[in-house]
Image (cartoon, rainbow, N blue to C red; front, side, top):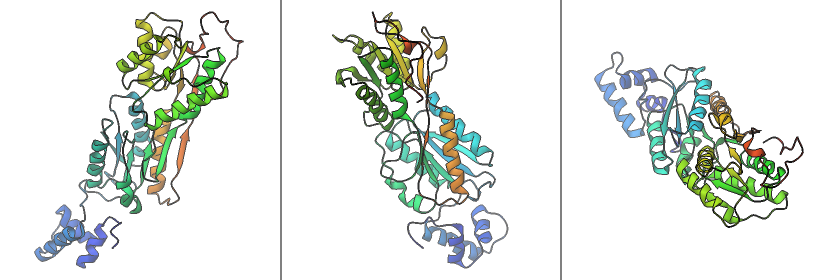
Amino acid sequence: MSRMRRPTMTDVAREVGVTAKTVSRVLNDEGPVAVETRERVLAAVMRLGYQPNLMARNTRVGARDAAIGLVIPEMGNPFFGTVAGGVESAVRARGLTLIVGSSDETAGLEQSLIATFLARRVSALMVVPAAGGDHRHLRSERVAGLPIVFLDRPAAGLTADCVVSANREGSRAGVAHLIGYGHRRIGFVGDVPATLYTRRERLQGYRDALEAAGLPFDRSLVDTGHDMEAAARATLRLLALADPPTALFAGNNFASMGAVLALARAGRKDVALVGFDDLPLAEVLDPPLTVVAQDPAAVGAAAADLVLSRLDGDRSRARRVVVPTRLLTRGSGELPPPGAAPPAVGVSAGPG
């Protein structure tokens, strides 16, 4: 048996010369089995490195208590909660249970959670990669046929299915929208670290929009903050520049919340703002928040569809699914620069 394939109950049965049903009886302590046979089965389990199914089920699609493991970076981020909901809605209809764990955006904890899920012999694995992760350790599992899908960010060091938002295109549309309203100095409040896939893609979209409009990229207009308070401080630093931005593009939901908080604390209603990702109650802010809206439920559902197709026997090459974004204009992104006349009605950057 190839070392690249996970040993199965059938392998154990073949090694001992009994049926898979007999092996199942031994491992689950169900029904009578001769003492000598039991000892030989357990010895073969140890020798082959077979990991008994801790959930007492097989991995056939639709089997009772079959499970899918999902690793997300943060439980408290509503985006990932909605992604998980999209996954669960799709897999529940197939009789599968979703098990969710948080990596706390830490590569080491992510790898530990993955190991735990593999020990439970999940039917499939879904991962939102933590910053700085390396997924080469999953190559043998993928070769062995375990369905693995990455969400929101692609894998590092591994060719595998992934589902991502149109990050670069959406960011480009949001910044172009601000440019269309007359802004020439646009600040970018992004996530950390700078190597994070979503942050990198959205910053590139910001630069694409500037380049298309013939505007220079000014590194002093880019600042970072991972959580709301850090993003608020980054916003205030940008506004304190000698030549401050007249508009801001926030690279994720926490950056948007931080920017809104900073502008409110500073009493500024003259700075235009477009955020990437929608926020609860965005429409009741003053002014209401213009956003490039992702569809996290669709991201989760698309990832679940990929997993289910793999479980149904699809062995085609790894696929990349891109979920479109939408520009929702509400008011904050339609403020012109101080002293400038508003543009003609109908200015738009086009779909995200």
